[in-house]
Length: 162
Ligand code: ZN
Image 1 (tube, helix red, strand yellow):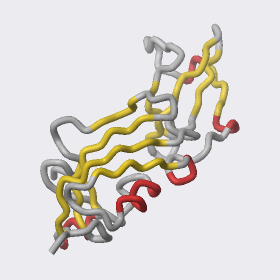
Image 2 (spheres, helix red, strand yellow; image 1 turned 45 degrees about the vertical axis):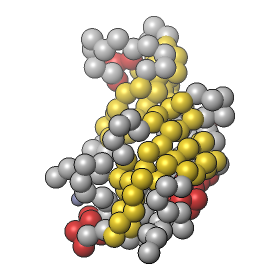
Image 3 (tube, helix red, strand yellow; image 1 turned 90 degrees about the vertical axis):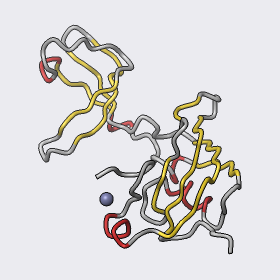
Image 4 (cartoon, protein in one colour; image 1 turned 135 degrees about the horizontal axis):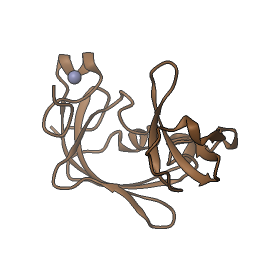
């Protein structure tokens, strides 16, 4: 019986992610990415397009921003005083940092521009507003264990190690 990708399956993939301009953003190397299908481990638009596929298939999936990291929100670009950053950090436009909010959540931010006193930061996800192009090879598909279902992610070499 051919194992098809469906909710509750652990799927090992190799992938390449590029943007409209052809820039490659990330790719799996020798290792696979293992994820638990149906648990939101990967962007929704990719998860939808992988459903029903089986081992050995190559899937080219184009995913619109609303099915990936959302549209860019111009309200999430803010000017903050330089004093909000630790002294000794060498801020450069384009730099990505992780900031912690008052609830302890870590959020990525991108430095957009600098003046002597202020830093313009972009709190949008770095891939917000981007249409994503995935090329995915389906390497293996298996039933998830009860523990993986409970945790909501895959375990093992290409998944969570713990
Ligand atoms: Zn786990």
